[in-house]
Image (cartoon, rainbow, N blue to C red; front, top):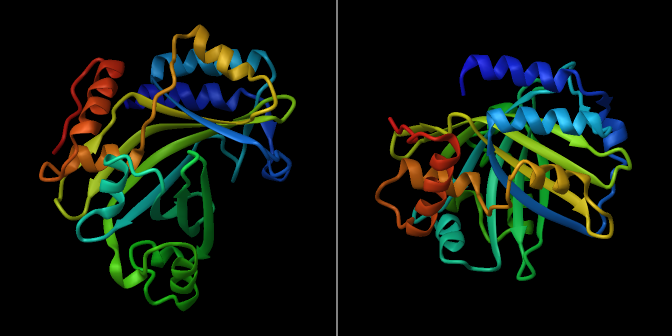
Length: 265
């Protein structure tokens, strides 16, 4: 993503009225439905303008509304977590550490998907210095063993994802929207790096009992739902040796969305 788009998107997000983290914690989506969407930076600006017009508010954290995130994804030597997803295993897990850069806080996170397609996330706080290696933290290791199939000594870092996130909440607080831009992947095992350029990944989390204004906005801009995993796309792009045929279709969809080939170095 060009610096011009960074500047314009930050300005657009900054103009949206604020919701605080304390207020957002009150958004209880008990019957939550998650949907992901793929678009580009130019269309995102249109979505942000429409969201502002109908009363959405943007989360402000540490004084900004576009926040940098870093995540480290862990996997087994044979990439079991990646292959479980590729092979359409319904019940699967992902393990990552995530840093909220502006606040300096970090977590070990376990994402678990059940056979009904619902994803639940559990997390525990860790030190920033433990992002790449948390095996020396007994509490984190015990938490991982308790909530996943994996142990700290059976997994290791595969790659990092860096991105910038905007979080929006609708006026009646029945849906939350995360918007990820400027996605960059670095694979520790292959040494390869890739950027999704102007691609934007949107995730809508809504109360299943409530109508969604955002779905209407996205439909109006011809932005359709798509199943996409940042981890799986990153592995597909940066590890040519792995079985990834099903995800190569997703890569082509992203390239069509941004109207250019994704450069891997």
